Image 1 (cartoon, rainbow, N blue to C red):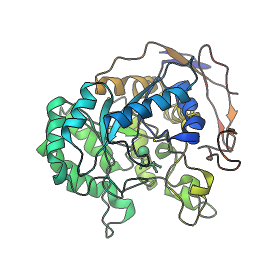
Image 2 (image 1 turned 30 degrees about the horizontal axis):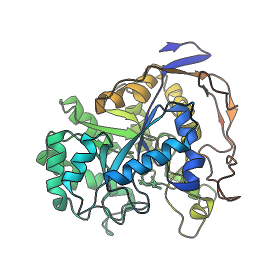
Image 3 (image 1 turned 180 degrees about the vertical axis):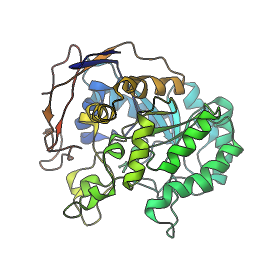
Image 4 (image 1 turned 30 degrees about the vertical axis):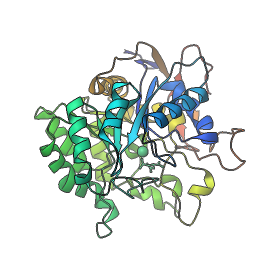
Length: 363
Ligand code: NCD
Ligand code: ZN
């Protein structure tokens, strides 16, 4: 990493959690991720969900076709766990290099999760197999009980599901995804410092910038509604400290989750924030505010591959200290007029701009 006050050169990063969708939305959003990130762990919550090796292979091909040919980008596919998924199918996908990991959505926890797992006991054979073959388990860590407050669902999940899961499968490689609370930070950090190197967490840019006031600023703001929902300021502070700490158990996962405008701006708006276009600049802003830019490369480009046992990227990219104002949306012919998702940071000025060698600058 080279650092001067006007630019920062870092190893090319990866995004360890992204929603690229399908069809016109895929074509519209995939280039933004591929421009900056060399690899991305792609979520399987399509309709229907990606549960088989053939589906994942075909989806991977559609992603590759949606990205400009001159960009090196590798989609890392995930299998969507259901109550009935076959451990042999998972193992086959993993050994053939199609599945990088499997995703656990508690049934009905979030967007397109109705086919998720209704009870962890139903997938015990699957988890045993994953532990045996060292296939990572990616967890949406929220309980779904109607009597648990939506702001408490992550902390409740850790107590009632994650701690027992860890005890039962001590060698299973687990990522607690898009963490949002100080309870999650404390749990991951404590276990990691105690020597558990198979437990990690991803952190999104929006959970580093927003507290729950954002959803109610001057009215009901669906642009800032995602799952797990953003929490109180004390939780945001804990996440900022974790991300910028340099600890290898925390790494980058944007959870960029685009929805058409009509899906967000409705009386029952969808959860998800579309941050792919300025994700790295957004993280850089937080690391700069904390005086921790020297830890950005580890968080964005090194902790993730090491956890997954994958090589570090050889290319670099440059963050240039040049202000840019984020537009509300980007135009794209593949989507209906007015349906392009609102960009995270719309209307704000960011201090950094990503410059990718050999590619035109965006601003
Ligand atoms: C995601 C989506 O839209 O698919 N939404 C979100 O708010 N993060 C699903 C998810 O990751 O929970
Ligand atoms: Zn997600």
